[in-house]
Length: 188
Image 1 (tube, one colour):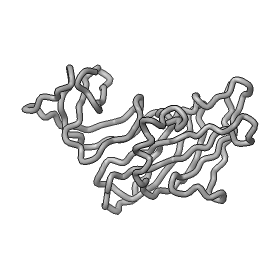
Image 2 (cartoon, helix red, strand yellow):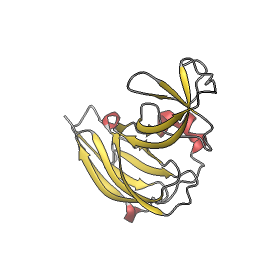
Image 3 (cartoon, one colour):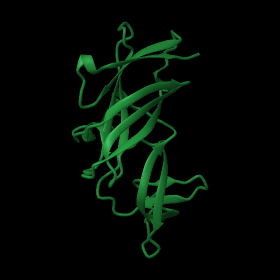
């Protein structure tokens, strides 16, 4: 949209433009979120049809997009030098084409983001794609243990020549072989 950088489109079509975030959000286009916001009525957004608002809370929901490092690297490459924050993967579940990950981390005072990066591997490799989950807490120093579920749409990883893909999943800050989670992704 003209004049817009980052914005959220609500179900009713309203455009919310974040006011003075202390950090850039990294989530990809198409990520569904739940937000709590306060409209800044005395400030023009500069975004055609947008409403300027302070974001109070933001939570990723729905089966969000994955970031293909082979295709999206020009955009995310400059951001990959940001050091991800620690977290735990508590549970992994496939629901149709959606990878659901139960995660836990410390925080509670800032917005947290989880991004799933994919690096396609050669077709002859036993593992068809390497997934890397990154957590960005944007400097949150609070210590409450947060448990959440984040989900990602794996449809772009389907291969025409098969009905399943074998994937490896690691935390972005730990790619040691013994910490890999292997996922058999079956599709029709």
